[in-house]
Image (spheres, rainbow, N blue to C red):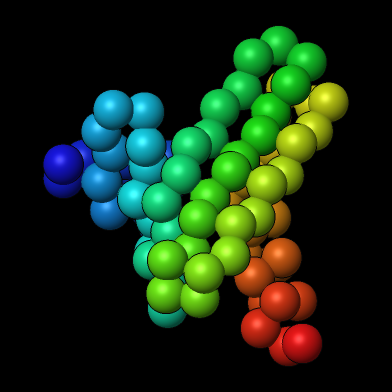
Length: 77
């Protein structure tokens, strides 16, 4: 489902709790979320066949920026 979010410019769609992001030239699908004292992102890259999960004990983290940084490390290896 097309669902733009001005707070997450990388988001191309959202539906049934799944986000569809385009980061670093690649498509990602998964889930992000936060509650007081916790924040996380779990995204799957179908093109490359790997999953990245980031969990934090902070209420707010830059989820998509952290995913992009992890992606850069993976691409370099």
